[in-house]
Length: 317
Ligand SMILES: [Fe+2]
Ligand SMILES: [Fe+2]
Image 1: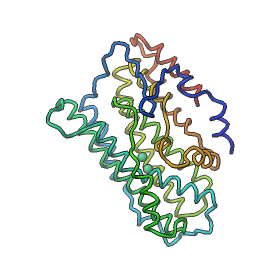
Image 2 (image 1 turned 45 degrees about the horizontal axis):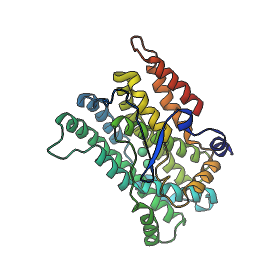
Image 3 (image 1 turned 120 degrees about the vertical axis):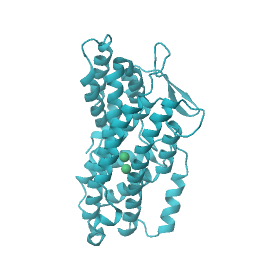
Image 4 (image 1 turned 30 degrees about the vertical axis):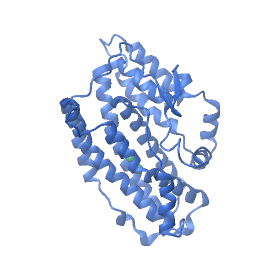
C-alpha cells in the first residue's frame, strides 16, 4: 500500500495549504495563533466542561478491561509477520511515553497553585478528572504492549526491554500549543489518528491476542477522541469563526507524538504506515466535519472564514 508515501510526497505541507506563518524557535515550530484583536478566547465555563467530562469518565469505567483479560494462553507467535513485529515495537514506544504526555497535560492545565484564577482552576479541576482516567487507559496500553513483546518473543528480556524503552521515554515531551483550544484540537486529531492506525493494523494482523488488544485499544482511543471533540465543539458553538486561527495553527503544524524525538522516526513511521495502509491526514476529516457543522450558522458574521477553512481542510485529506 503506497498511499501514505504518495500523499506525503505529493501534497504541499499543511502549513502552506493553510497559508500559515511559522517560525522556528528553540528547535521547535512555534507559531502565531492569529488572534486579530489580541484577546485570547476565554476558558470554557467549568459547568460546560463538567457536563462533557463526567460522562466520558463513566464511559471509561463501563468499558474497563485489564491486561490479564487478553487471553494470553491463545497467543500464536508464529502467525506474526516481520511487519507486525516491527509495528508492535513502534507503538510500544509511542504508548510508553505516557509520563511525558501526562506531564505536559498537567503543566498545560495546572490544578494546583493558590495564585491561579478560580474559574480557570475550576475548569482545570474538571479536566483533571479525565486526564487521570485517560492516563490509566494509556498506561494499560503501554503495559499490555510491553507484555506482548515478551510473550510473543519480540523482545527476549524484560530488563533489556525496559532499558530500550527508557532510552526514548526519558526524552522530554512538549507541544507548542498553550491555549486549551489548541491543546484539545491537537489531542482530538492525535487520538483519532491513533484509533485509525490500530484499526488499519488490525486489518493485516492474524495473531489472535494482538487482534484482541488492537480492538480494545482502538475502542479506548475512539472514546478519548470523543471527549476532546466535544470540548472543541463547545468552543465552536460559543466562539464560531474566532476559533479558526487556533484550529488552523494546529493543523498547519501537526506532527504525531515523538516525531521530533524517536530514533529513526521518519523512516520507521513511513514503513509502518505503508505496510498497514495508514495515513494520519485521514484524521483531519473528523475535524473537518465538526467545523462544517458550525460553519454558515445564521447570525455568525464571519462564517465565511469557517467555510474557507473547511474547504482548505478538505484539500488536505
Ligand atoms: Fe493509547
Ligand atoms: Fe488515547
